[in-house]
Length: 190
Length: 262
Image (cartoon, rainbow over all chains, first blue to last red; front, top):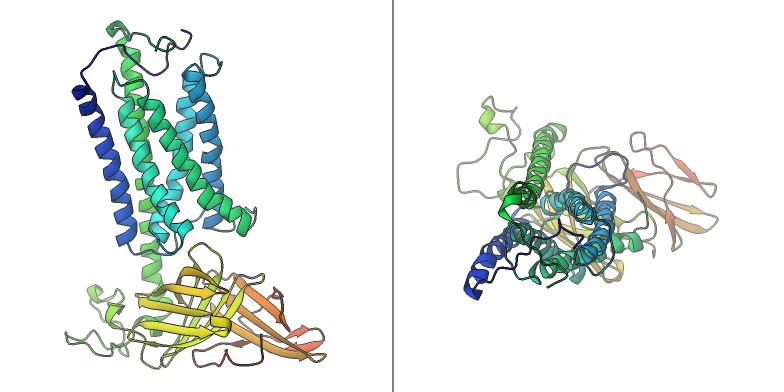
């Protein structure tokens, strides 16, 4: 196949026990990350303020645009993943595009994560804020799980697309509950 | 799956190893960026915390109402020489119950609106305002560090004083927002101006935030629009619709609710 640098899926027959053992640790670490973020967000006293980036009206606007950047890159992620797995035609460089768009996407979300947890915390006040808080913790846990799973060989072929889809869905949910909300209530503003 | 199955031969291990490390490096990069940002935040807020008591000493060193433990240093005295005593005292036990004139300014957690809270002698005057069309004046009291305030049309606010900030929830027009307000040193705070022009009542509320920015609404007989710019330093008169409006700083005991209908 043309995609010689795609996911290393090796045709090795492993007993189910061994596959479960390989998956267990990444999932456990990801779950621990998600829970740790949520607990920190709940226990840490929100400061209400945090460092800001020049050129924007406020931290909310910065976060709305950073998340939108990540959201657009997530679209690239979805399309490039489909190409990597042979569902769409694509050039040989597709895996590189997938990796680097993913890296930039998640790096864009890190300042948002830090500001959300440091300045605002985990908030259950309204359904939107609660869903956003839960999804935010879940997203970084799922992302951690995916990165750790990528280091494993001989996983079932459905596993990486599944966890990738989970990460993608979480990010879309985060965008809907923050940026879209911000743009429709406060306005499309820098 | 035939379409994607291939064999990673051990002979291609350099590339395989590199691609295997990639996700871990990505993870580490994410953690490193997060650590740097948290570090910047902690450093920045530490600077803010050490500078704000100097900016507003009267507000940060309030005598506790009832403390069984050894009392903190007398706030009337000069700062003690011991640097250990220099940080703000534990205000968990020290709600502003004394006759202090204090103002807090901040935002709702989703930046829906700004809020300013003025305290004096346990009395509270507060104002929530988004600078465009949502505003509410609230009146209430504070006791044992707990704030409650009510406004017209079931508007209400609750809050807890913690350190140099008030955290709580405000409800306006059926919407409920968590907020945080930081101790504000003048000219940051809450301002109000009233004027009758051509038989029409006008009321303007301004919130001046610690960074000097201001958010306000001009309510002309129920029609709301952004407020004209206030000079909080001079509080010079404004002219609206040909009438003079004299802005005043709002204190905790200023009557802000129960006047003419909004």
